[in-house]
Image 1 (cartoon, rainbow, N blue to C red):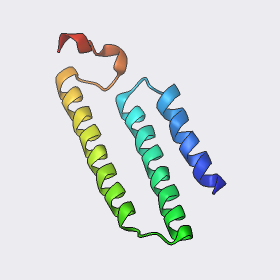
Image 2: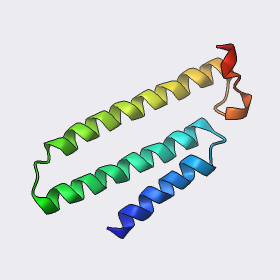
Image 3: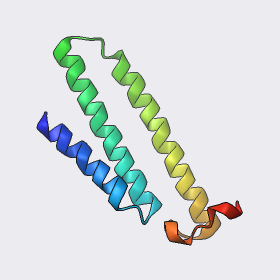
Length: 92
């Protein structure tokens, strides 16, 4: 249980403090989503609820990951790198 909290807080730390590159930021976000899924699955097993909600959450999180990866590909093809400091997002 405490490992789930440490994993989530580690992902939050990466998401907040390592925001120089878009790919690292998205990796921290996906790490938080993964540990939220583990936490949800753990409590669904303990309290005996239906695990179908976990499957729906996992499907939505996969769609979130695919959307983030496609944004990285679009930005790398448009600007040449994934560093936040080189983007001028107001010019879009």
